[in-house]
Amino acid sequence: MVSPADRSRRAALMALAALPLSNREVVSVVGSGARLQGSRTLVAYFSRSGNTRVIAGLIHRSLAADLFEIQPARPYPEDYLATVDQAQQERDSGYQPPLAATISDVARYDTVFLGFPVWGETVPPVIRTFLVTNDLSGKNLIPFTTHGGYGLGNSRSVIACHAPKARLRQGFLMEADQERRTMNRVAGWLDEIKTKG
Image 1 (cartoon, rainbow, N blue to C red):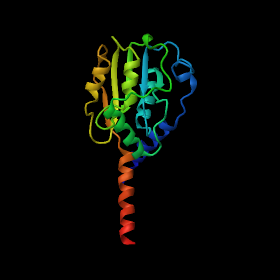
Image 2 (tube, rainbow, N blue to C red; image 1 turned 90 degrees about the vertical axis):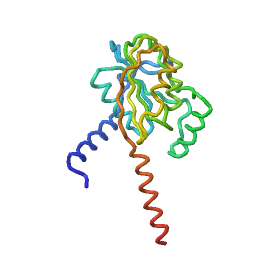
Image 3 (tube, rainbow, N blue to C red; image 1 turned 135 degrees about the horizontal axis):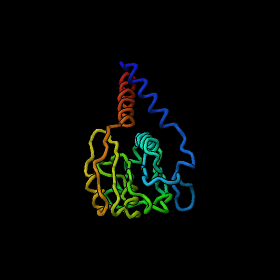
Image 4 (cartoon, rainbow, N blue to C red; image 1 turned 135 degrees about the vertical axis):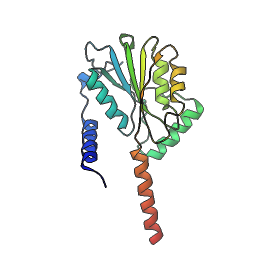
């Protein structure tokens, strides 16, 4: 049974995830966007299901930081399992997908919060692309990650390898596997229906 406190917490998180991010809150990017003036802190994140986006939004609002959503030039499939397959192929081949947009002035930031879900016990391929296309030398790099129950995997060492001159700080880690858990529960329920005829 879900307690009233859990329902309230879940409702608050869903409301935060649903908040639109207006242009004035998005850092300038090559080709489009605007800048939140004066911030020396950037929150850059990739999110598939919204969990990492919620954390990014909280950091952004709490620190009055600039915000940048990392997106591949060609979006990942809507289907969860198709995305898992594609990400595994990209990981295994070392492919770094091109980004939909890039930051035009990363040099202005002292601190970069980097958010992503752990995919296949490592960083998503688009995060590797972000790290190699932005010079984070001398910057405080603070990861915030979500995962589906397997923890960080080798994420920290991948970040250190792809941004070797950044000052990698202790980050934030949270299990947030609602999508996989939902899929497993629905699949189990459907299996029960199939076996009962």
